[in-house]
Length: 335
Image 1 (cartoon, rainbow, N blue to C red):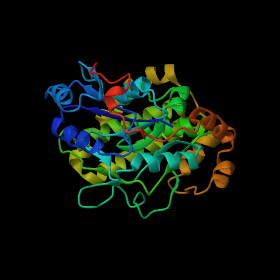
Image 2: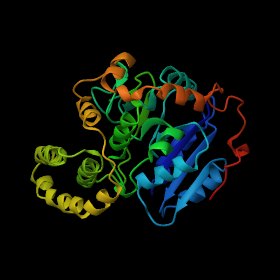
Image 3: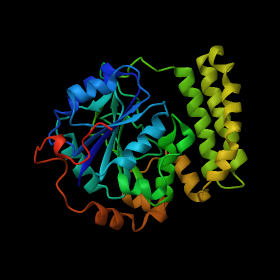
């Protein structure tokens, strides 16, 4: 089992430099570290070339968004498992990859394993996603703290290319459950997320998340349930904006119009999922699943997934156990 680490970045040179300095202390080392420089104008490439020449760097001259950047990295990678981080997040444990390999071996049904996201000060991103919670199957994850099997990602089509930023993770989780796989939350592997203040416009992030959530409904939800689920998503997002105050509420129509502009794209790329799977996926936050046996009852289409994954993963040693420098990897270069 081989491992890559992928990071998209945009104008956060200092944060990325700190993360990269932490990654070279992992033992074993990853087989690849892949970074997509997404329209950066802060000399990020020069910093990587000088300080971390062993890393693979892809460049987008014009900003294309984190979703497109991660998709690029997943398709460029050669490893079995791709650890997804932000430029301001990194694993805490030095033997993170060794533990991760064990978890993927124990959970062959998982297309994605997601981890607790620890913020500065020791707080976690959510009360139900801490190191003290039980492992379970979840409906969504965060790309700042997750690991994905690469071949299954490619097999189902991957992230929706026109999402730009936000909500690609729940949409891919839904695709995974529909394909017979699952997303496992593993509390024993913690990722620190420093949450850089740069490029973190919260109202804008909310609008992108809300728009893409509605697009996901139009892409995946079967008829005749599309209008009902669409109304539910719009009402829920409006309720969240209302809780933030008038400065958020008055902007809500902007994302409604942006969403309706994407109807054509959603119609062209629509791949509806059976209602039984879609409904069970929607229930996961309120009715979590803790065992493979329960997963088989709730998502029966998952039969045969373990055999496919085991054949793909083989019995290779997790990570770059030899300790050979990254630069010996055939993909290590500035591109």
